[in-house]
Length: 459
Image 1: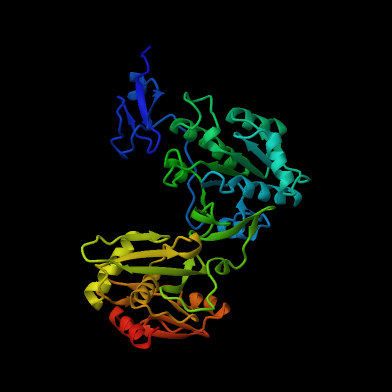
Image 2: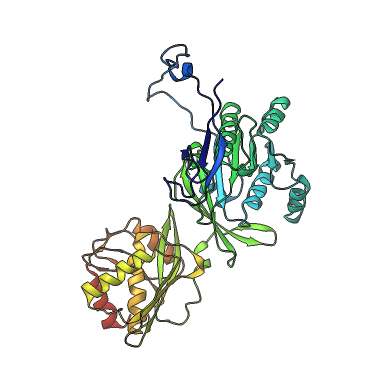
């Protein structure tokens, strides 16, 4: 019998090489290659014809009738919003986040609510003992919830347990997938092959038995989910739990959802009794605006179908000649800031070459919406000219390299949310389609016209 050949698998991208090397040739990660046992391929298997001997599959038309999937609403509105209405029967959901961000707390709260509603819920922890989970449940006031707890790391033991009972649970939570071990694959838990094999068995169980499976995933230092990238392709829904430990709020973001919309968010606040829902997240990211301050403007960001008002803060410090200016950004793309500064200098005649520029999104929020360009430009102009912007106004719009202010999507939703919180005027693109809104919109076709307006009126 042929001996199995050694192979080295990258723990980041899953690429396979026959020799160990310090850096992965595919993803460029250092010290990520781990030796794993390779399969033995016989000459018969290599030349085997796959066009016969199998079972013919049944094909159906695209217009065939299909029922909408049943959902299990958790009763936590922000979680259900991110999921698209609740957990889908027979689906696999992957949730990732930094250590201590609240993944286990949120899932334990959801499991308790579903169990109290009459659902069969099982919580399997590979990182904690069952008593530790019970103590956390008591601290959260959920000690009476009929959730079935277990501490196990063997996928075979987990699936055998539910197979012997004859009735699969409605919801199965695995915390975490990096601690699970499949005896069909050699290797330590957490390796690429083990994570892929364990996930495949659990997802197959979910599809066959109609159980909604939730997998908790570790994250790397750059915030991406640890393990092979194929794990995110295998599951139906990927949720990212974000937040800063210095702030009390947490954001649950849907990155992938086969049963709902993507980019939906749920906002939570960390409290003594666990994670509490934030019905109006705009109030979290706005500071007291009783007094006008230079370099501050409110931007209506859009996350999925939810507008969230955030405050953009800018600080411009003039330096002595010869000093190298610094650019620091928190909560926004630094490359986007460099582009806005270049457009302001080339198209509007404003000079930032001798100034240090600091940009911050208040509250630790991260903005990825391109409509924030005009709000950032307004904050920079206000800080440079030392003229405060009106405290009852908002700004939104995308800036092109030509200096054009381009229209953005869902302007009506943005202005409607701002009007709820007392804002009554908006600065935006001139080509923005008219929409019924109680706010007064001042439109600008070019960034130069916008600069002239702010400098002429002093905000």
